[in-house]
Image (cartoon, rainbow, N blue to C red; front, top):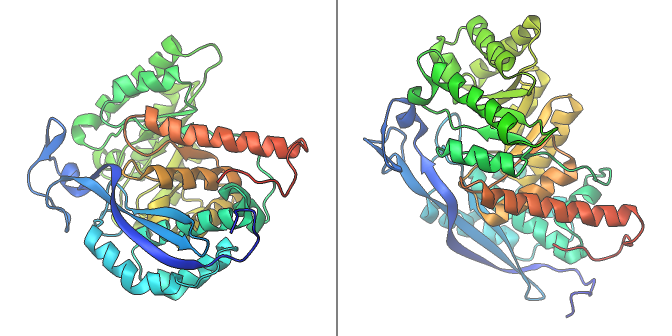
Length: 430
């Protein structure tokens, strides 16, 4: 059967194979409790169940759907760097993931029609089933089903999303956000030289990097501002986005007024560059986090600060993201793809946040794969998210290449369609 055939394709078989995430899984609790670094390793005993060491290589599982014309489409099951923390699923275990997928998901996939992405996901990842599945499985399976729908319909994954969710044809480029990892100085230089839209993350995940009252963090933040001025071209004004892993709250005993004052001071010192502060507090559970962040956002508004708070910890699932948006508990919500699970939920999360005038950041983790990064790019571009993470890995260049180039290709394709140079039935790359 030729690829041009419109015959309805079904899933004939399923392949599962172990693969690697781009970075490592880290025990966030152990690091927050002062685990010392020895080169690339962390020394000491892990705190979080499932970890054999504080830092372990990121595992993943590729799922291949063998379609009835013998084409194979793939998706990758993977977790986040800080698995098992802040309300997230436990540490990814390859053997367990494969076993659950074989026993529960594969029987539902065999014979499944793939022309409709939403229908296929609803059938295979039924709500009652998906609630009990590891999010990594729903993430990888939905990627494969999206690629299958794109192949069946001779469309790009972004086009399938636009069509099935009745979205306006996207043309605007989604700002790229890069994270530095621990090599924060060299990687910031790379980001500036490549004119990254949002930078640098900073990985401020310990007291050593934050300081007793934030002095070490502020020194780094001021350096970033100076470096942007020194190395950036005229008119280059990136948004500065720092992930502080709850350390503002830890430094100021989670006193909302003090935390807001520190965040506002940071934004003032970095003016005229705009500032995002991700995870200023970790209040231990969803409800306290929701209430505390709503108070923090209100206090920053009272102070007249332009700083924007980004929710991450305890804002993992679609329902939690909706709650943060409904309660104005963040200026931006991170839609951390492996934590959300199904791409359907990630798409719904972006659209809901935007409907509530809350920023939608299509994020994820350095521990993902090339395939999951590409799928995320299609989701971000099709939904016109406010920013998208350059992933996977901590090397900056690779993530910018994978996500940035894919978005440029998509933008060129959709622009061609808008100009009438590509018919609506023309085949786009998958």
